[in-house]
Length: 461
Image (cartoon, rainbow, N blue to C red; front, side, top):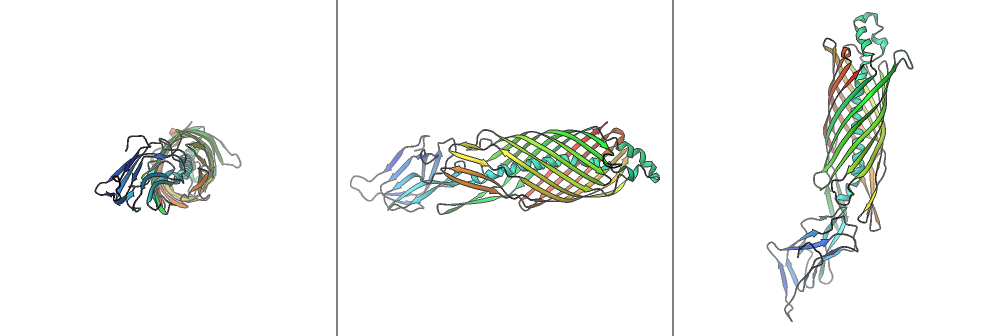
């Protein structure tokens, strides 16, 4: 009956006066129907009527003629009527039908004989809705790492009293004074991260339990540039305040492995920052906003694009033991980072989606270890490793779906704790007013694993 138009009726009838009709679904028995999977008032299907008994098994293949998304439909869509003996196993779907936020399954309803109906329930497309909110926060926080890495080359600008005023270290005076010519300066940074995220969800409906594999890949790319200004001896002799502005471009993607769902974020970002150095103490603070477009990549039930704005701040603090002299150093680290997101809510195809504006709070404790040595005249190399333990301090993200007068709330629980191990190297050439860095990150948790790379350059005059 499949011809691209729903509403056909095919009847298998007894001969006149007959009562012994039997339909046997043997071999590759298949029933193909057109069905408009819409809402309680719009759904309609081709129908098979059997005026007799049914045995065997028949696969039902459904062509969804609705280009949009389905609504919640508790009524059901009749597909097969059987007037004789029949069991629920006689007609079946290979798997539930993905119709956007709801999946359809073939449900048997005994009526003395039997009716097979398509009924829907919240599917994988509903369970991933809060992932969109998490996606925006992950993109924001991952890209703040790029700015944090650019601030590490300022750690060499330690307290003047520790080196420049040390009569026993006169050979360091010139180097120290050159390092103090730290502003104005410009910098550029680029970064990429590739993460595998594991997740699953279940829906119980119509006497069945449906399980969904929500594993996905998260890729994030960013390019940032900024300009530094600064002032020495602001609050105390030898302290340094560096402040500036930054801008950049951000691209990220979220691709599901078992669901036909892909999302992309892209756009611009802008921010302001300040770094305070006093002896070994450093405090870095960033305020940033990302102005992005969410592209659902033709995901059924979504509009073409949605505006998504994420803004927040990050503060890192620590103490560098080791100074600018050649030799080892270590830095205990602590971080607090907070973001808020506003993604457009929307209503389409009879469904309403509300992305709740949940804040995202993350904290870190860590340690950075390294050593400083002169690799050739005028150039200092600082290889380092970093170990970090991060924690989600804000809990879950949520989204509500309203359809057919019923409201569903779906939540995503990000990792509570995760670790990051990093290795990198900084090069400083005060005579050339240049610093460069490269860094590799490995992220691991119970349901998360991935890598990241970062690199960049700073030039001052």
